[in-house]
Length: 98
Image 1 (cartoon, rainbow, N blue to C red):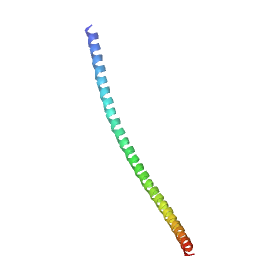
Image 2 (image 1 turned 180 degrees about the vertical axis):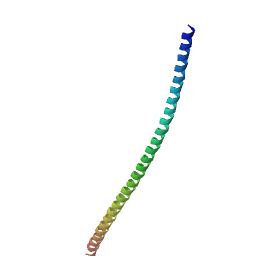
Image 3 (image 1 turned 90 degrees about the horizontal axis):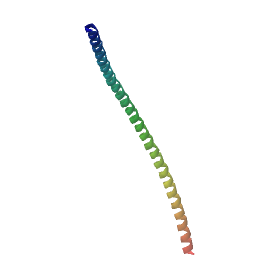
Image 4 (image 1 turned 45 degrees about the vertical axis):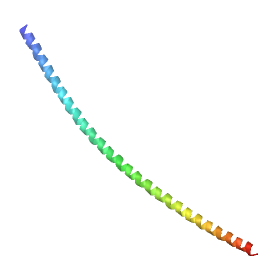
């Protein structure tokens, strides 16, 4: 009976120690995975920041192009209006002079 009890206690101790060891290994793996994931997230964050910067640059370029086009159209319309104004002035002077 004593031998059986000692055997049971020994087996229980081995199971207890092995489960503690397993838990410690799992905790270590968890911390390791957490560190890896943080590193990956920082890398992804950096890539997203770069993409955002590139898109911002493209938008500024497009804005500049649109501004230049609109200014060109504005200047063109201004010239046309000046020409029309001069024509009307000439017509009015001609009508007044008769």
